[in-house]
Length: 88
Image (tube, rainbow, N blue to C red; front, top):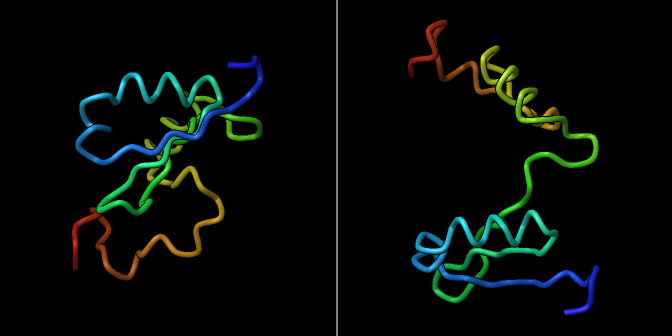
């Protein structure tokens, strides 16, 4: 493989479960990993920390506050949960 050339890997769910650590290593070296079900893509594995996304410490701090890391989220669904986070 030529340095700097990303690879796109398609893997079914069962294989992804068996090879998760290896797939994460691929993502961290900037390859794209697509999870498939019944031959169709259903999810991507993407690196958490990227340009403008902060660090894991930032993510854990947001989680501790009960806030999503994704600021593009349109609703936190408060109407479905009480003040303790339990379903209404």
